[in-house]
Image (cartoon, rainbow, N blue to C red; front, top):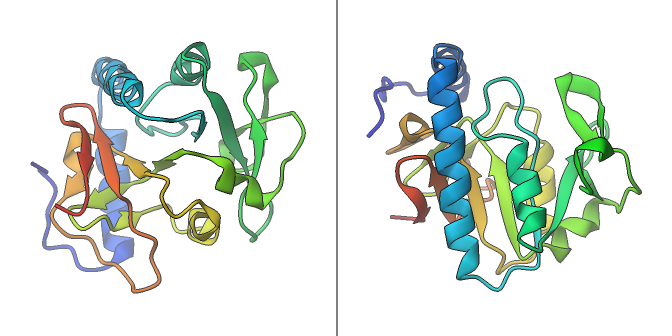
Amino acid sequence: MSSLDESLTTKSEWRRALLQARRNVAEGARSSEATALQEALLRWLDGQQVRTVTAYVPVGGEPGTPGTLDALRDAGLRVLLPVVVRDGPLEWAEFTGPDSLRPAGFGLLEPAGERLGPAAIGEADALLVPALGVDHRGVRLGRGAGHYDRSLPLAAPDAPRIGVVRDEEFVAELPGEPHDVRMTGVLTPGRGIVALPM
């Protein structure tokens, strides 16, 4: 259950509160949460027919660790990472190891390999989506740039869309809009993967 003030009504209010709460998380808690997220994800994937997964390199207090990318590859999965291209949908490139990452805009790390274009998200059997918050209906709150909003409609319709958040960031209700692409699951350190809506 979230300890956040769930009386917040606008996306900007929620973003401020969620980002502030992330800044207050101790490093030891981040590390133990990252371990729990990775273990829960690998357990879930073990029962799925997944060959290709989209993921991301966590930055700025985002839950998770870059080591999860290596764990996904070690499990035999092809891992696609996002490449931000101005205001368009995300492009994608394959993660081939830590040495394949380079600094990019917005403080991100991106794969340096061949860009596969925006449509490559459609090759993924499951999508791990960064989020500031996810609610019980599957509404995802991102940072507001809209990159995933423009990209998720290009994904395979039956590919699970899993928002990755801290336990406190999984809340009853976030402000959403009809055009929002809903998550079909959420991954938290304490609950593992929960199917949505619930």
